[in-house]
Image 1 (cartoon, one colour):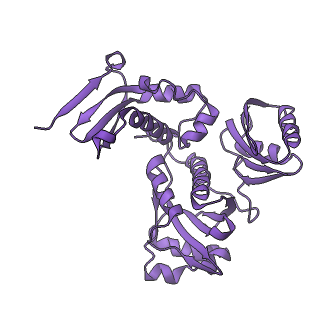
Image 2 (tube, rainbow, N blue to C red):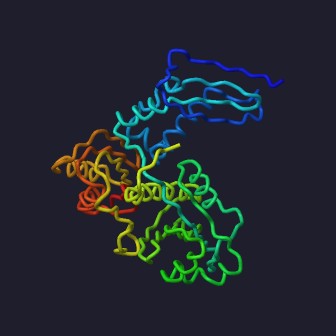
Image 3 (cartoon, rainbow, N blue to C red):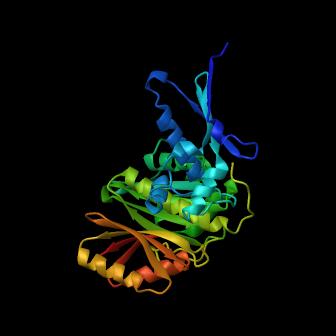
Length: 339
């Protein structure tokens, strides 16, 4: 008979509470940290409800996950499985109180093509393991955004080459992708030796945006790309029909990823890399003097600063405001470099 242990937090039980059950396999009970697993489960549930990485949410609302146990209806073991029952309404209430918008529209699906620069050669990434692709596929599960890799069979190999990707032949990309019937296409060009990654986001009509991400290693580039893709996915999902939780403008330049003007206004977390703290203070003064913008919180580190902006401006208009400051360079949405 299967041994079962179940602990109930009785004060949280209610017939009207909506719950979400998570099942976690426990491979080695003696090394398993239940408290840590529960906290991670709540973080994961919040990420799935919002499409925003936990680190970004905590940056905007440091106390968001304090007293995480209050968000758990019950937890217990069923054999080698830990079952965690989360109070979804309570978690949603916390997120909304913190000004973090829920993602209640349908998640768009992406097809991912990838090419990599190896020395002087650029090659297509096939079905082999690739750290950046692996991180993206994990993010697919983490945020509930469907992602698919091409088969990279003979048909795919003949249909699309690295030269066509880097040459930005939109027709080649959309034609090669047609067999998969996926409207949104992400194309990646990683350049490990230059610590840089280029990406292209395509619609089925061939219109696209391109941008660049820098990172000292593949992990850094992958996580920065995931933030961009999740933000982009949220923006285009606003045109879809709302669902219960469980398109692109013409490119302006090869290095721009300008947010759409119709993104929802609210609270934005701005990240700025800087060298001169005086210039950083000037930027802060510039933002504070702008109409309709309030700096909710500021965190300054040795070479990077984070600012939480409360504003009625759209994401695109906020980006234009920041970009109007002298000597600031756009890197990706809400990420800048101050010279």
